[in-house]
Amino acid sequence: MIPRFFSKPCTTVIATGEAICVPASTGFADWELELAVVIGKSGRDLTAEQAADHIAGYTIFNDISARQLTFRNDLPQQEGDYYFDWLVGKWLDTFGPMGPWITLKDEVPNPDRLGMKLWLNGELQQDANTGQMIFSPAESIAFISQFVTLHPGDIISTGTPAGVGHSKKLRLNPGDHIRGEIEGLGVLENSVEAW
Image 1 (cartoon, rainbow, N blue to C red):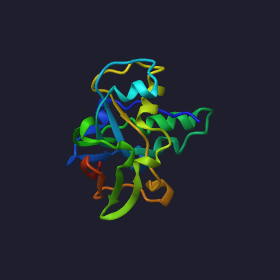
Image 2 (cartoon, one colour; image 1 turned 90 degrees about the horizontal axis):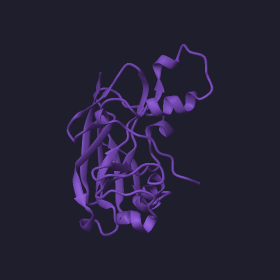
Image 3 (cartoon, helix red, strand yellow; image 1 turned 135 degrees about the vertical axis):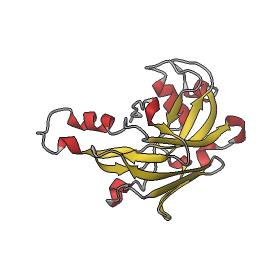
């Protein structure tokens, strides 16, 4: 098994307290609470051991995803649609809430043992631990560094635990409120609005 990664443009990033704006092109918007790693020094072709030394700190990331895109409704299925929709569904403006701050690496002695919780409108949806991730942050960094040079300020989000909305048939709707918390890293809160 290998990690799977994609890029999100800077226009996806919003701060705690800002609104996630769901456009009409999104038929099903979903949450994914994730631990994010902030890169502190450049590197390429790193081992997992080397990668750990390239981490400056950690923050909370909510990888908002359009599970369905409405423009597809009237189009025939084509080869490659799954990957196209999967990527386009990640790139939408405001679909990358992050924060509330960066916690320095020295302040997080056990990044593999942090409690993670996400609430939608006050109801607990995700309740897990970073130790349940398939790949450690260092393993993820090492894998990515085979393909791209990492630079200070790059942010790598490491994947989400069970409890996303798609598995429960719960989608984000205007008026919703999301609260994500990772132990020791603060609280990330965002409202949801129609675009």
